[in-house]
Image (cartoon, rainbow, N blue to C red; front, side, top):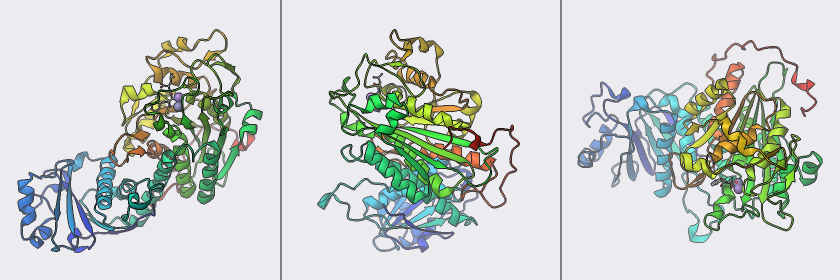
Length: 543
Ligand code: BES
Ligand code: MN
Ligand code: ZN
């Protein structure tokens, strides 16, 4: 998908031309609508349009009982009386209650409507109060227009794609509008990249090709990247990654992106993100039922998020150290596949008894986490399509997360709020730890069926060593959309990237750096005093 050509003006939409006009309409009486003197039941900005249509709009809104309630929509043909062929009004509800996610969803609906209408040029009317969310408007436009059409040919190939948007702000044009637009486009491109990778079929995207895609991304984004092949994985002692991956013709790989800002590293924060990259999860010898097995091509969504996130980081160049790591493997049954009953070592050193080869994600993550902890992160975050149990608990639209301490949980919760993604905290219930006791090894990798997401998290906790601040995010539900939802498409969603990015932006703001285009000039904060710490280069594990 090409980036949209976006212009932003503080004008009424009726004065702009395009193929489709979409206008966001707040509910009357909502924050921005007080003192309205419009004739259209308090809906400002529509008077010009209504008179151009000879009063037809007002009559239609009355008939349809359109009042700007959230998610209400009215669409009509303008019969050539306006500069656009079609007009779509989208209710925004109470503007006082609208968050970043609502703004993104509104803009995403506009993009989707444009694509459905085969409109190439969109005029988007953005009500007063949303101009501060210009970045989210742009994110929504770019993410809502996402379609995975790479493998469609002939009639199935979409003939038209939204290309140009004029954003008409009812409020004043922010002075840094251009920076916000560019930020929104960079972020959305990263999320869309994550979706593309997640949607790739498993005969095309497997550990080697995934690593190659990561290298291409790193080059384009100006990031350092290391790729470990099967030999290197064995040499380094990542035996769990080896175990999971060795039953496939496509041997496992491991990828490590780094963004290390220039200048002194003393007192600079280091954030490390880790992802599960199972390019296809057949279950292995503990094979999955046939129904729905194809969905397991998305089982590398956590790793795809790392690629998307790092592509953004490479472009924003935040003033914090950021690493992105993923382990990639294909989980297949084969003469060389690992088995239930096996005992394997790990990069950490602990031995693990294999119970069910379908619980492969936690195994490859265990080695990836043990690798990541050598970077001595101030914050370690992993994300994985880890358990069906988490989908049972929270459904298809919400991920589950676990934090190693309350301060880290607070930080993560703030990032969730800022991003608008749906994530719900789950508890590390220590009493479930007994389920991981093994007779033949230090630990086994699965517990009971009940509380399956928690026992998986408890297993991972065994591999984080002395990392104090860790968040584990089980994205099994929302990573693979069963339908269009908010700004997300059906299929790969990139769920998680926005929250992880917010954590990075937060750390960069705290460091007082020129983190990202979103920081208004003069908003730099003083560097917070931090406890003295050895320079990062001092650690031998650091590359
Ligand atoms: N990739 C699956 C988890 C999953 C399930 C993701 C549904 C998305 C949708 C994972 O590898 C898996 O198979 N987990 C098992 C673990 C069990 C064998 C302990 C599960 O959740 O059933
Ligand atoms: Mn599995
Ligand atoms: Zn899996």
